Image (cartoon, rainbow, N blue to C red; front, top):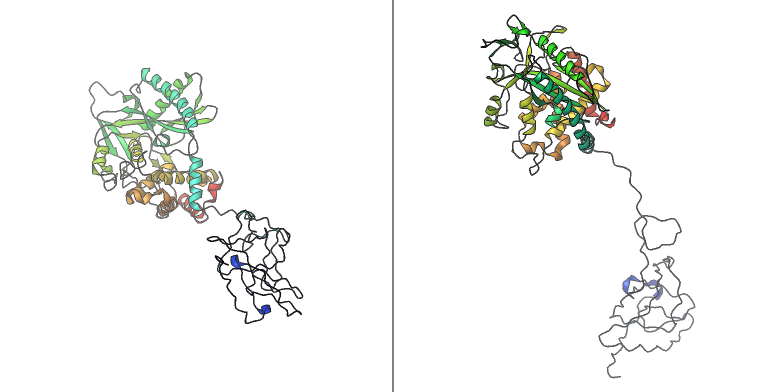
Length: 514
């Protein structure tokens, strides 16, 4: 017939049909015909079907005419059964009526497209197992929840830092109350006819340095009093403790009541300072505030505010001198290769301070001595700690310098809560140690926040070595050893070293006791 393609003739199979499996398009495997069946198998390549026991050949059905440019489409079961080579594995599906038994020859050169509206059965391979014998729904089961991965050290440290972060509302409330108390005290002392009439406020300490941890419950406030024309005499070659004498002052010396001979007595002046504060505290209304018992060797008068949470405020008397820094500080403040020579020169032109912290003499304290204080310079360094001027600013690159300091302060704080043997240690040792670390590693890139655990471990290693060698030099007074036997006894240092090493080697279990 004109326009009809001549039917291609498939060659007769050389092997018996029982030994050969013919693959249809889309991967369907043709199975061997059942014995006794005369129905030709779908997808068979042979032009004729053979019946067992009947060699006669049945007439071949005429193939439907193929439209030009369009492949013939064959009706397919919605859930075709997939039969393996063995003929015994069937894919679950929905049973549908079988098509007519009229043999339908296949055009080998044309691949049949799948009906777009009929979904294919879910292919079950290596994946999550369903219940045995359950019918496949075409959806994989959700994977089982994996076991919780152990917390890495970096994640633990960041978690602790997050918990140590002060809440803004708590800061505001605490600072408001403290400022009100300090303002009342300052006003009372300035209007009182006394030796402390000229005192001024100087904010120092961890809160104002922005390295306070846990809660805003501790504040340090300096009441500075300028003393002109003083003459300092170093006490026992310590470099940190001094006897204060006065040069001739026209009009008389307002602090003459506190002199012992020619020396200004720190203990006498501090006692008088405490008496005046007690009187002024009684005048404060609307705030529950009291003066704590005096601590031996402490340069502060400690106030306790109940708001209702307890807030501790250390009021520290400080003598301000605008003269040249003492000779013992000449090689101190080693920031030339870090913050720069100009910054160091500028800082050394600022006033220095003397607080009534007495030197140890045996089991007691020397009442006349004053100790050098550089808390205002320390505050500047903590606020301007980067070799790049924009370090940790809003538009600058962040570092983990302060984070390491906070973590170490917290570690010491937690250990002191558990072990009375560590009472001699204070956070100032931690601050001094990290200043030395920042000096040795001035580059901001060394303190990348992504390397927090590594930086913290390096800091711990340095601090442990200071304990082991009993050597932690004052950052501003190089010859003054904060870990000398006179400052901290050997057993306490060995005890702290042991506890830090344990925490360091066991992933800081004390950080989990939050």
